[in-house]
Length: 169
Image (cartoon, rainbow, N blue to C red; front, side):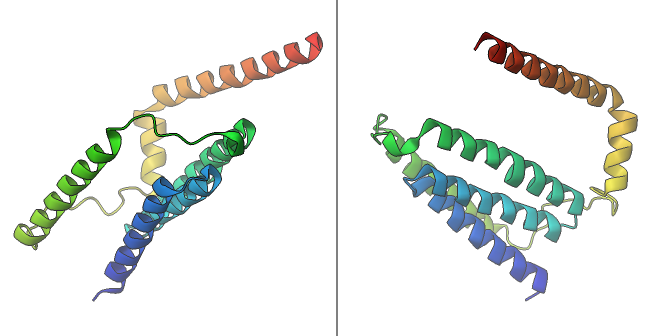
């Protein structure tokens, strides 16, 4: 067995177990930590696919920024006082049906389509920092600039609202 295939399988198993633990854990902070494990395993998959920039963006943006925001909101809400009730009664049977369908489809593809090429080869430079930089600042320069102005306006608006609240207190 190839070493990359072994890493791929191990990472996939870790990702699957962390996702199952994330969904089944009652404590939301632990669930968020399991989600960080899923994000880190996704970054490892990107490294296996030789896309280091995408892996670092995954770690920085998702495992770093987004999850810090999630944990902050969880702590702010105070989930220890929440009563866990199951409001939607039909979601568990639906989840089992969809899981069975996904497993059946995966088993079918593994048995009957094993060995057949399903992916096309991509350029060797695909996903490299140079190619992403060229795409962002040549082909997609207008959306990047509009997004940067929008983020700047949101940041200035947040600062203005924060100072207004302090003045009224």
